[in-house]
Length: 252
Image (cartoon, rainbow, N blue to C red):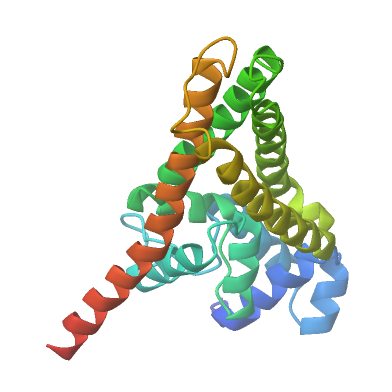
């Protein structure tokens, strides 16, 4: 009996093309015809991608990483430069360079670096701060006769923070509109932040009390602004320190 011929293994580039066409809602038969690959092979490649999050062949013993350390560092650098990138956007960026991975794999690699956990903590802090600002502003809205705009400052700041966080989750659906909205909200938030600083800090040397400004309201607004100044300062200083360390390291 004649031995069956061994099928030639598909290149990784061809497997990536199959996955890309499938993600563009192209059917198995259509992909098969376009790439001159059997339908069963197309189905097998897509099934493997859905199961493992990658198209590369894995060794039979042990589990191979779908993203090596180089690509893991690349993902971290991408999110360092643009922290608001979603997993889908990271996936698309890697795919454009010929690396096809699932969002679940990206999530796991970020968890290993502790980056995803940091993002969750940051979002939780900002959401909590925004809700607290709205609550304090609403409760004490009539308790600062000397500067009645301070409660309004807290209310508006809380709402804009929540809207900014919401845009992170729906930016994929909004596309370019999301970038325009984020830009407008960013400019408004900055202008509002400076205005609020003038209102709050101008009262620092004056007395506090029920006839002037409620202490809880004032000190919350004061702390809120100081916290944001610290965050702005760190966001400016840390990249400079990181860049300097990298320069020193590579020069050695």
